[in-house]
Each structure stands twice: as C-alpha cells, then as structure tokens.
Amino acid sequence: MEDRELYICEGYNIVQVFDDYEYLIWTDKFNNAGDFELMVPVTSNAAPYLVLGNYLKFNHSTHWMIIETIETAIEDNRLMFKVVGRSLESILERRVVYTNTSYENTISNIVRTLLNNHIISPSDSERKIPSFSYEETEGLTDKLYYTGNIAGNNLLDIIRFVTSFNNYGFSIKFVRATYIFSISKFEERPIVFAPDFGTLNNSSYIVTRNDRYNVVYVGGAENWVNRGYMKVKATGAFGNEATGLTRREKHVTSDITKAALSNNTTSYNNALTARGKQELDKTAGLAAFDGEIPQDLPYIYGVDYNLGDVVTVSDGLGHKAKAKITEMTVSINNEGFTRYPSFELFDDTADVSEASE
Image (cartoon, rainbow, N blue to C red; front, side, top):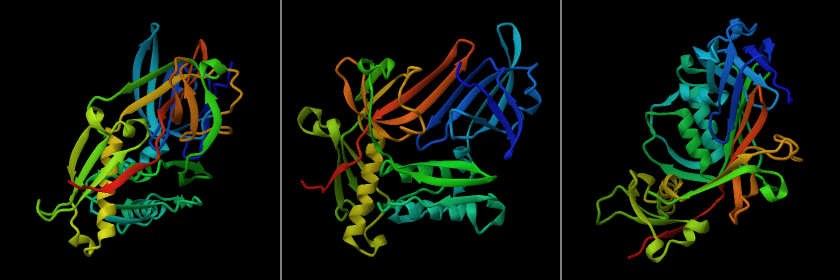
C-alpha cells in the first residue's frame, strides 16, 4: 500500500508520526486554500497531539494543513475524532483589506504590496505575521488595471482575484519555520489524461451554460451621457458562440470615472476591461473533467505535473480539450489509496474592444 504516514507538527517541529487513521481525504487546490478531513480512533497515540492550530504534513503533498475543527463521531460503532482543516494559504483569510486601492501595476508588485501592507510590515504592528516573506517569481511582467471597491474583503479573496487575471496561482510553503509566499505560472505539459491511454479511470465530463454570459459591456461611473464603455468577450469555444442566438450579454457598471484616472483614456479603458474580465470569470461557460488516476501512472505529481498546469484531457467519448489542473485529492482508507485530479477547460485570453452602437 502507498505510504500513508501523517506528521503532526507544533509549528515546524514534528511531534507525532502515525498511520492508524480510519480514512484521510486531502485536497490540494490551485489558487486557493486546500482542505482535509481525517478520522482517527480516540485510542490512537496521535490523539493527544490533534490540537487546534497544529499542522499536518503528508508525503504526497508539498502543502501543510492547519487543524481547524475537531469533533467526536461514531464510525463502525467505534468512537473517533473527526478532524478537518485547511492549508496554510487560508491564513490570508485572517486579514481584511479595509481601504480601497487602485491597481495599475504588475500582478507581482500588486500582490507584494498587499502582503507588505497587511502581513509583512503593516502600519499596525499587531497585524504583522512573524517570519512571513514574499519570494519573487521570474517572468511575472503582466500588468493589471483595476479600480474598484475592495474594502471589507479578506486578503485571501483579493489575492485570488488578482492572480486569476493571468491564470496565475499562489502557494505558501513552510520552510525552516518561515512562511514563504510565491506566485506560480502555469506550464503546458505534453501529458494526456485519458481512458484510452490508461492514464485516467472513471472519468466524467460536465458542461453548463446556465446563468452564463460570453459578452460583458462595462460602463464607467459617470452619468449615462458621459460614461465610456468597453466590450469584453470570452474566447475559446464559448467566445466563438458570441453571435446570434448563442450570444449571451451582460451589463455591469464599474465604480470608476475617467476623471479619477486623470482623464487618461488608456488607464480608463484598461480599468473597465479588467472589470469585464472579472465578470467573465464568474459567468463564462463552465466545462470540467475529473477522474481517478491509476496506481501505475507514469507521471509523478509534483515532478512531471503540478497544480495549475495545462494538460490534455479526454473522457473517451469524444470530449477532448486542453485543461488546467485545479485540484488534486488523495483519498486513503482501509481499502487502499486513490488520487483524483480535477480539471477545468483552459482559456487564457479575452477579446476586448471599445463598445459601439
């Protein structure tokens, strides 16, 4: 059977190693906090160390999990501890952004500024998280133009929003008792997950258009006579349908004015476009794959492919596409070890133009 050992840590120090749990479901997520669920007999030697705030490590993941909830449960007439929590990325949720900010910079610089202002060196020293650092990733030159109301949102949601514009992701590693935040870029991998290749079992495919739009018209905050407009259209298969009966339009109003950007037309249009892309992210057509990875898969997770990477996926029924790996779930119980990836169809661009009558 695959290695099922779990490590309980107090901070960076391992205090217990165990494998006598009933089951474990461990999910790594791209551009988000992962989560886990663990069922442990109350008689386990690990039980005294299952304490709120302690960390879990696992040989099948590079992420660390935080114990957030512990409850008693009955499983097969045995008293158990049910333990759940999320990965280190969730600590960003502990800070709120309480002022509005205009973004017109590289995504890397925007994220660094957010972390500096709210975690690394905030003006209120009580908000600082010790031993937290930002690790630069080379090649992150893409710019983001956005002016909107972000006050009141937690830092996790805002950073997820910022990095999602260019299909970036992020992670927090824990190295020598230091939290290291870094942004990750996707890579296209020459890997095929498909039943015909023996690299994906029990695959499923879902596609929906309910409450989805492929064209967004974005207006500024000026009055109806003076406001500017940008048209932002989805690309890929759903964007190609943006004509005739299959065109689905939506209107949104940004909370910025051209005057607020020193009447700079380029900055104004860029800000409206960013607002449109944000809306498309919420309303674009959804298509997703998932399945089960066979034990003899020749590709190694974390070596040959990672979260956020783009691969080719097929369900064996004619649905084949480039897709981004969004989640990786490991499930271990007394019957064995299973790894489940989740994929979303990949589209890294949007078609933008000034709106016309």
